[in-house]
Image (cartoon, rainbow, N blue to C red; front, side, top):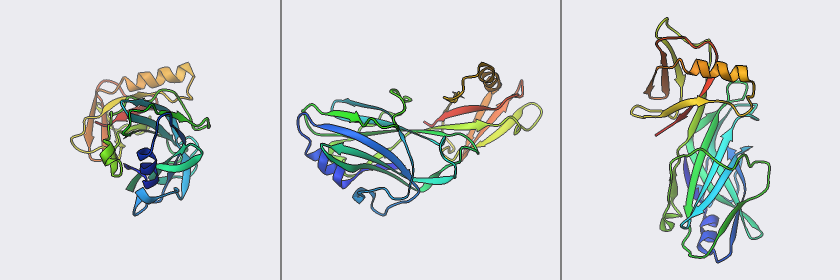
Length: 255
């Protein structure tokens, strides 16, 4: 997915003055694409809200971190667009648009749980103090986000694409899909992976999970993994010593 400042967002950044406050008001997803995303003023085909994790500003570069989960998704859809709205004074505008024509599958929660993290940066050309805040809505999730790729955008390019983001994909590893008898193998479908990638794979404990026995079983199952092999759209997990006896989640950070 590539992110762009909208034309309205570009004009606002160009005219920012001392003491200004930019307030991020909402972030939403859609399954629709636009032929010219920079000219959009609204996001059509709204599917769900994203959660704003944190906003930081340093050396005239602002970094916004977002999370998309499918905890409230009851029907699968193809994520093709993300819109971030902001308020400048009393005026709310569509500030940033992310778009991917191919799209990314967001499954229903009944199929599996996923969590995508995004980091978006934009710069402004002023020595004045500028404050960036978040509207106190229920889409705010947490103060800290995962440490993703640090991005920096030059002001002279703010009307062009911001850049590709890095994402963390959370995948369920079912207990009943292991094959073989030593090594035990399970192949996961991960659309964001390709040959040559060297992702970081770690265990993921769902935020809503609090039962100690389940967490312990998941940790024990995850510890059985001895090797991971990446190919286009797939991640092969291999266990040489023991077969996992419980389902668990893994977080895949692409690099």
